[in-house]
Image 1 (cartoon, helix red, strand yellow):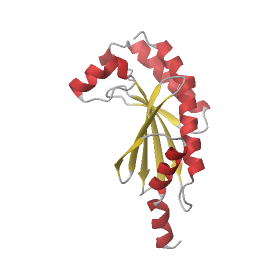
Image 2 (cartoon, one colour; image 1 turned 180 degrees about the horizontal axis):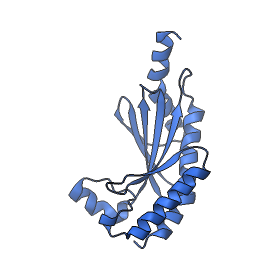
Image 3 (tube, helix red, strand yellow; image 1 turned 30 degrees about the vertical axis):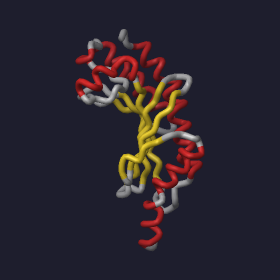
Image 4 (tube, helix red, strand yellow; image 1 turned 60 degrees about the horizontal axis):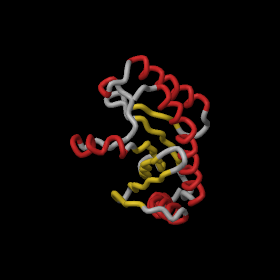
Length: 168
C-alpha cells in the first residue's frame, strides 16, 4: 500500500463524518482535528454522540451516552462531570442494582452484532461504542450514518430496561 493512499484515507475520515452529519441536518462541534461532538433527542432519550478518529488504528470510534441534563445540571456545574447515565454505589445504587445492570449490559453485548456497552467502574458511566475500522478503504458517509442509526436504536431499546433495574 502506498503511504499517500493511507494518509489520504485517514485524513478524510473527519470530513466524511461531517458530511454524514450534514446529511442528517445535525448541528455539531469539531472539538479537535480528530473529534466531533453532536447529539440528538430520539424517542428514547437525549444522546450525546462523540465521533473520534483513531488514526493509529485507522478506526472511527462512535460513542453514545444518554444525557440526563434535566436531572444532573447542578452536578455538572459543581463537579465538571458530564450529565450522563451512571449506575454506581456512590450515587446511591445498591450492589444488587449495579450487578443487575452489569449483567443486563453483558447479555446485550453477547446478543448484539455491532457495538458494545461499557460501564466505567470508577464512576458508573454507561456508554455504547461502535468501532468502525476503515483500514485500507476510505470511510463512507453511509457507513457513518448507519453506525449512528444503529447506536440510537440500540440505546432506545436497551436503556429503558437499564432504568427499570435501578430505583433512581
